[in-house]
Length: 148
Image 1 (cartoon, rainbow, N blue to C red):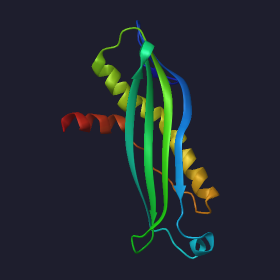
Image 2 (tube, rainbow, N blue to C red):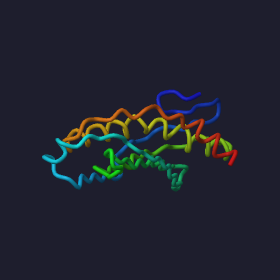
Image 3 (cartoon, rainbow, N blue to C red):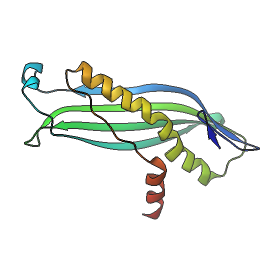
């Protein structure tokens, strides 16, 4: 059962220890004055998840987002890259395949709202309108990756 950032069973649990912003980059190659005259026609984004296991069953899960604001001519108006990470602790025995599912589906789902908030905040501070990043079903993405 996944509750409040923890996966628990009778013998084991996978618990969130800390969430932090690992890396952030924002580029807006045109000036703000020009930006006032430019319409963003599309926001393209890609996600990637990187899992690193440390000693004592501690896992760092890093959800990476790269987003591009494009104009009508498909020119990049701004580029944002966010690496939102968290430390998760495994206590007790959990099957390796379940740990893989937890770290590649459940943990990114916990980190996702933080990525969305960071993107929104940075774009507004950069002088651009916020974007609405829709829900991502990390479990579905994980299941599709198993089939490929």
